[in-house]
Length: 183
Image (cartoon, rainbow, N blue to C red; front, side, top):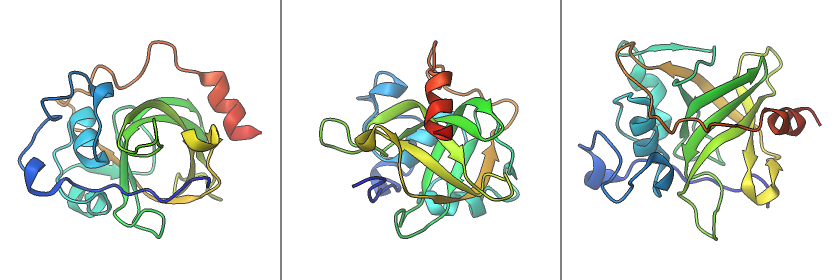
């Protein structure tokens, strides 16, 4: 199954007041869990609740837009394959239609979901080149998944907020990202 059903939301009461990753995660990339606490820790954007609610919650609190910027949160819309939405942090901009995300709880690793993934390829497939529809690299298919996902837009962190140091790798595979997107 390519682009399988993704379940991503908040870890209810346990993490409701958390401002960072759970203590068992020594580094951002060691994290295993839901996308929401991961995106909050990676971006510094302090929004809580299911991923699909982030876009509306950001209104009036954070700048929002349709232009990707490193450190911004890409807010995926609630849809059949993403019943709780999804949030991921922009780690690199490759070209006008390709970027890289760092996120958690997307692909399966060792047969389980929840793991963090760094510098994952995302391809803008929207007709207007506005990042409203994307395809995301999916480990199970070792390439871009076949599903197109709707995106509300990008939530930008405050200027004083710093993204996590492991947001991007030292040598991301730009060429691989372009090949995945344009083949």
